[in-house]
Image (cartoon, rainbow, N blue to C red; front, side):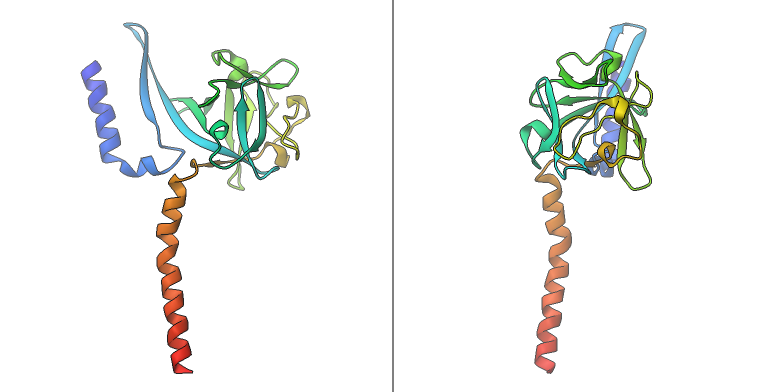
Length: 201
């Protein structure tokens, strides 16, 4: 079974290279075995969460979580664990190794152990290309931050609020290189067009 799983993983990454270019699909598969008959696969994605309210990124500073992280900041780099093809996720800070969790009072906290249901969120994809994260345990309570970047209580959130809207972004440096590659040729053509126009005049 181990050999077949390795072959599957190799084929997946080899035949689908475009999947590695998006934060939604750039993942690697880990096999966790509790006993010979219990094998589960987990997707692990690495990206940043851009807050629509603050214009900054969600960052996990140990027990404290806020939305004031800079683009490319080490505490804003998130490791998102998802069951294969599922929408239930756990969010861990790559630097702090703490998970985002919501307690029974709706307070957002960071915890080193993310196995409890309080640390599981469900992704909801919105029409405006943003994503909302609702607690898997406390229905209707969302991960959200106010304009100062401080966490909102889950009981005071709704899906329509901008405070709970996030956008997934690649870590700084990866997407920047692609943007330069895409836009440089356009800029050169524009300059040439201006020179030709000036000569004609």
